[in-house]
Length: 125
Image (cartoon, rainbow, N blue to C red; front, side, top):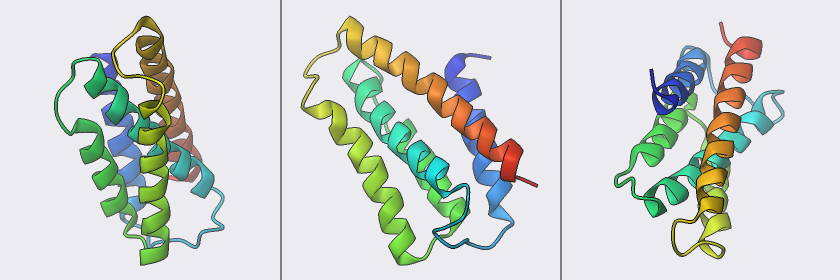
């Protein structure tokens, strides 16, 4: 299994772990981790497309996360803002794929895997 496949599987597992539970209040202990995961997905969406991956894979993963959480409008807006913040954070820095951008992809992939695994193991069913 490739690193991308493992990361996607972890994202899906995280989303699935919360799919059977009702939406939670913003002060839930896993909320910061989910918001950071949304930001990581936004960063990956920008960087991976910059470095040759075409498509909406990371945006689709974000949509799955939002769908599984079924948030109220205010919380949904926070998810979207986190994703957009991650996307924009590299837009002013990178206009082409560089070794530094490739390293950022690697680091964000690892962070996303860790977040997904930790959230699912601590708070999942």
